[in-house]
Image 1 (tube, helix red, strand yellow):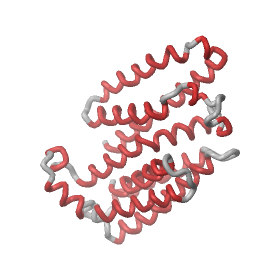
Image 2 (cartoon, one colour):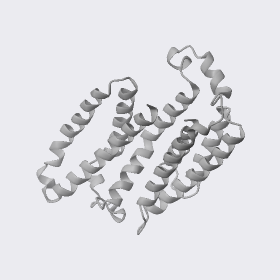
Image 3 (cartoon, rainbow, N blue to C red):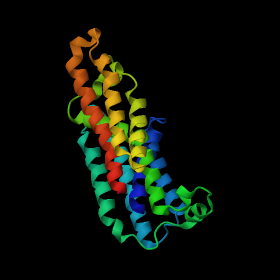
Amino acid sequence: MTWLALLLTGVAVTDLTHSVVQRHVVPQCVGAFAAVVLALVAGLTSARDIAALVLVVLATVAWGTSVSRGFARGGRPWVPLAVLGGAVAGAVVLSPLAAAPGAGGPLGRWLDTVPWPLLHDAAPERVLLVAALALVQLSTGNVVVRLVLTATGTVLPAQHGTAGDPETRLKGGRLLGPMERLVILGLGLAGELTAAGIVIAAKGLLRFPELQSKGEQERIHQLTEYFLVGSFVSWLVPLTSLLLLS
């Protein structure tokens, strides 16, 4: 799964960079560079790994470009979703073709020297994938949620950041989303996935008074749809991540 880890790292770094640098070209270049650096650190220098890295770079650039266009006025938000889904599926299908012995290099040597049993006994490939999936929860999860909301017509790109945008009325989603996804991912890795239900239930209970506020009655249906669609898509991100780790 080293190729998948490279892909997800490139995508996640692209989204994290875009949240800081609002430019069309810089984020995907930084994401592609991060994937290349990670490949070198992991010692992925065989001919197959280099060929896979080229595809990862292309997929990262395609993701960043399609996301920018998907959020633009008149854009097609389903395109970046198709790009990401196709790239992840391709990486999973092609992963058995990865050259043996897999990840190693400086990363493998560092893992052999760390005093923490959890990392010392872990395979470099799994460490790479867990780290990449953790990065995905931070920013890419928010991007995926926003794309689905736009594709389903739950929010309109033209309303982004305005008073008509439900996100401005249900405040804190951009911060709570990554936090809850990391908690669900962590609980799943710890074998306590059932406990993640507490996180899901708690969010619903905390949001319920806000959704029923008298001042929000005019847009209660829009807010409820936004909350339900956004929450379910957000929860699917860490659950899918756990599936990739299984």
